[in-house]
Image 1 (cartoon, rainbow, N blue to C red):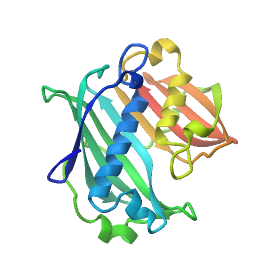
Image 2: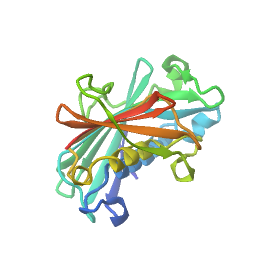
Image 3: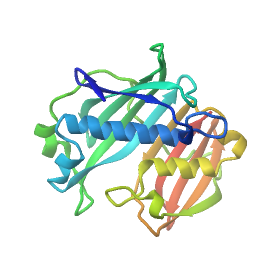
Image 4: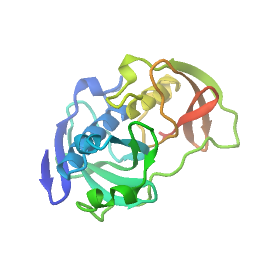
Amino acid sequence: MRQEGFKFIEDLSIPCYQTNGQGMLRPAAFMDQAQELAFWAAAKLGFGYDNLHEHHVAWVLCRMHFRFLKELRWRDHLSLATWHKGSTGLFYLRDFDGRNEAGEQTVVCTSSWVVIDERTRRFVRPEDMAQKMSWGIVNESAIEEQAPKIQLPENGQPELAGEHTVSYSDIDLIGHTNNARYVVWAMDVLPLEDALRPVKDLYINFNKETTRGETVQLYRLFAEDAWYVEGRVAGKPCFVVKMVF
């Protein structure tokens, strides 16, 4: 990883194990790359995982919107940059900008994060972290609008498309389901011919954490030229994804 001002950049080559049956980068794989870069960038600014863990708090991703401007395929170069945009309300904002070897944008992303107390699982408000998070801000946007709130459209009836019991491979280092796993589950319940198409925009909201042993019911709905997948535990939504192909 290299640093340009308060931007942090990782030069990557897309590996085969992060691609789908058409050789394109899987959306969940991009989320994995973005998450790892975000953690390292935050650490360089003094508010990474280890810094927060000392105070029994942790980062949790709440919303994300990413847009593929060009297809990313096996062996393609990806120069992925990220930067901290400060806070608004409960959210801390972080953007990402991916470019190919020619310097052309291939993927852009904006994300909204919260800090939770690891013991109570409650939010830590930005004013409580203001001093620690007040520097390293870049006033630039990869996507101008914040990642929006996503809900299932009211003009349709979602169908139960499958379920998933949270298990070993889903759990991250703070003990809940890793954010990228929800996109894996969502893609798995789409018709294969749609899941293999290039994704243009993907939006995801995380409403409630899930943990090992819980069974998540997956409802899907095609409406407004997009696929929606909502996960529910005991009838209560835990995440919703909107995918535009």
